[in-house]
Structure formats: C-alpha cells, structure tokens
Length: 216
Image 1: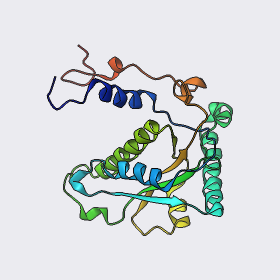
Image 2: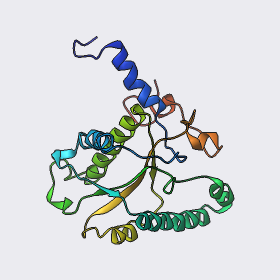
Image 3: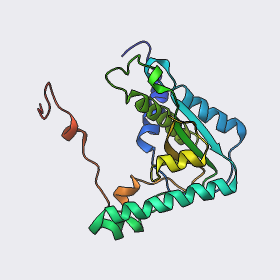
C-alpha cells in the first residue's frame, strides 16, 4: 500500500460516502448554518477543472417567489417529459422527481459565460467544462452525505428559460437545480431502483479490455 494512503478508518469513510450517496427527492425542511453551507460549497469549489478554468457558478436561491418560479418551470418540463415517454408516461408521473419546495437550500449550478476563451484541454473536447462542473457537484454531493444531508440533482427544466429567470449573461448555461438539506432517512438503494423504474447494471458489463466490447 502507498505511504500516502489514508488510515483504514479514513478510507472506509470515503468509500462509505460514495456507496451511500443518493439522489434525494424527499426532504425534511430545516435550515443549514452559514458555516455548514460554506463548507459544502468550498468542497465543491475544490473540484478539478480542465485548464483550471473553474467553469462552475453557484446561485443560491433565497427568495420564496423565485423558488416557486423554478418549481413551476420544473413541473412544466416534467409534464413535457411524460408526454415524450409515451407508454411509460403514467409511471413517470407517479415518480417524485424533485424536492424544491421542501429542501433547506436550493442552488442552481451553471456553466460560466465566455467559455470559448478557454482552450486548454478543450480544443478537441469542449464538453470538458461540463465534466468539470459535474466534478464540483459530485464533491458537494459526497460532502453533503458525510454531513448527513441529502442532495438531489434536478435536470427537468428548459435551460434558456431558467437562465432568463436568473438574469444570467449570454453564453452561460444552467445545468443543475440542486435540492440540499436534512432528510428523514436515505434511500437504501437508488430511488429509481426502489420504484421499479430501472435497474443498475453491474460494473463487469461496462468494463472492457483493450477494445470496445472486449471482456476479459
């Protein structure tokens, strides 16, 4: 084992946070102290980013009417998504897909504007800025789980409409509405598995050797 490794207990805590992280939809209200919220956002801000461009921007939603407006946008997209799902429409409409009204904190995470100026690591893969933002969200997710808080990533919204609501500059783009806060309990397994919507695939089905589709 590497001399740089964490202790047994520290490693176990890291792997536990990863294993028990859930995309939460049920929240118990409450509040977060400013110190705790700052700690979580700092964890997100410590994520890796291509070319150190730090493309993430966090918008904390504090006004009740703004929270309601975001909820309305998500609800409208939920209905449109159900229509697009055809025969699975009714099953989808029975799923709880967000906790916007119930969570302690609501955050919108966005890609910054003027991203075309950053070509380090993005000349052939411009989507790496989005990958960087996803890393920041994952950091926040794992830190929240370690703090005993739930987080849910909501992607049911029309980006331009949300950008206009939040007065975002041209070229920027919202990519996530995050519901964050205390929960009564964490799901024992992903909610979509519990609800019978989908089944997770085992790692061995997704791991190839040397060429695509080649299993050992």
